[in-house]
Amino acid sequence: MKPRMNQIALSVVDREASKTFYAALFKLAHVGGTHFTGKVTEQVQGMPGATSDVAWLMDDREFFQLELFQFSTPVPRAYAANRQPWDIGYSRLAVEVADLPGFHASCVARGVQGLGPIRQVAGKDYFVMTDPNGVLIEVGRASRPIGAGVGARLVGVALSVPNLGVAVQSFQHAIGCPLLDSAPADKGVLWDEPPGEKRSVLLDAGTCWLEISEYQNPAPAPWPAGYRISDHGLLNVAFGSRDAGELRGLYQRMVAAGFRPNTELVSSAGQVLVTYLNDPQGFNVELLMVKPWLDGVMGFRPANWFDRILMKIMMAFV
Image (cartoon, rainbow, N blue to C red; front, top):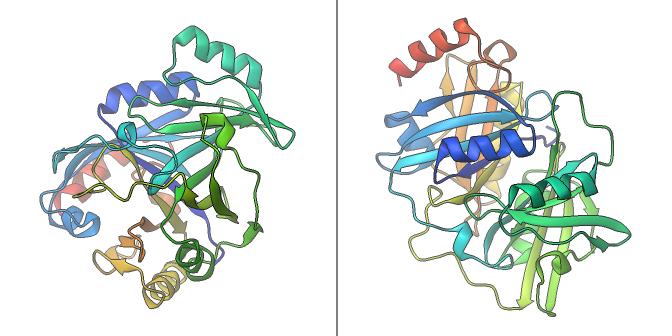
């Protein structure tokens, strides 16, 4: 299976506020949402009593979404807002826009939080901001045209890890993300990172890149005591397929490499397969297979009346 990241998930303080932020500022399309609860949800997410309301947004690509969870149980704690970009965990989200100076001016006019100036790294312009949940967002100029109807494309996720070798084993070798760069450009200047020492790699996750860094200095804080994926911030990324056999093969390869699944792959009549796994350093990764006819139910296209009825029926049996 060729790795294809098909979802980036956030745990948010207020679903409506975050949906408005990403839909209005980045012009991502809001395509639906749902309510997750019940035994299957608890098993997949690995949290007793897990209950959340979810919004789904899309950029210009098929079978790719931004997923916003507002958890009511377990009660979330602040996470992204309390961390430095080098602290252990999923550390930032990257997007691209067509008109970088114009978009920056729009952010200034809107009073976007944590907005930095446009700076150049390796001959390219970027700036950073934070979303309403404290998630650090890197904004760059689009490397290829963005489809009509949306204003931005999600292009990357960064991780700060305790051990780069273990992370490479997890994401490059087990999941199969090819190496793009063994020494990518250091973007720390964008968030005023103090001078220090770190090692990084850049991997190809199909639709997005993964930047994985191990910091020696500044010393990263570990995962907060009692951290759960429901805590407000970047929650996980998902790798998806349309083929059940491909996804099962990836699941088996990840488990053999040391990923710990919260539960075995859960099947919904063979039309949806899903589970969450945790790599040896605590990074949560979702696996997801959705047959195309269920895209409107699962947030991969705008939901119609049939999708909404079908979702209610499906959730009644969860």
